Image (cartoon, rainbow, N blue to C red; front, side):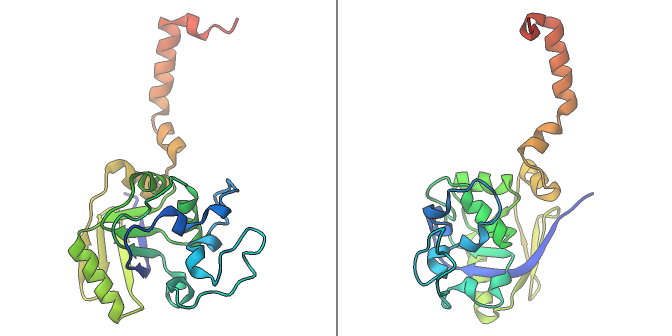
Amino acid sequence: MKNKIISGQVIPINQANIDTDAIIPKQYLKSINKSGFGKFLFDSLRYSRPGTLDDYEDREPNMDFILNKEPFSKGKILIANDNFGCGSSREHAVWAIKDFGIEAIISTSFADIFSRNSFKNGILLISVNKDVLKKLFKEIESNKEYILSINVLDQSITGPKNLTVRFEINKSDKERIIHGYDDIAITLKRKNQIIEYEQKMKKNKPWLFNDE
């Protein structure tokens, strides 16, 4: 059976209610291409001043911000506090996270629209309880190079000091992450049923398919 393992450095941002405007500011929403947004992720925190599409490269990085520090700049797993992804429904926030290289986010809770956008774009969201989140933040404080491994099929997180955390995920979202399905691929899984339904409708209600 196919599986997906997400393994990599953790990026800890111990803050609640991180909204989509903080994830990617509104001035970068003009493009509808899904790629190229990683450089704008947490833009207002990563750089010395706000940028625009014309001058985003002409700025000094804020070296106090975690994404500008090693080893976090190459992290694949983001850990944040409650209600991550709240605010506007902009899908660009998810595109920026994915384009940066982050494959999974761990928190206690996520905004609903952000959650749906994430799974549709192949980003795994894992909800854990407050005690587990506090433990993860505490462990990372004492060891910056902190690697977690997420087994999607087994629904488990493993890490240093024999850490093992189980998580819940619904069947549809699990399939999306393991197989890389988007909405079209999910629909095409029922291709034979769709064809069968169309043939039945043509037979029972032929006037609906009359092109004349």
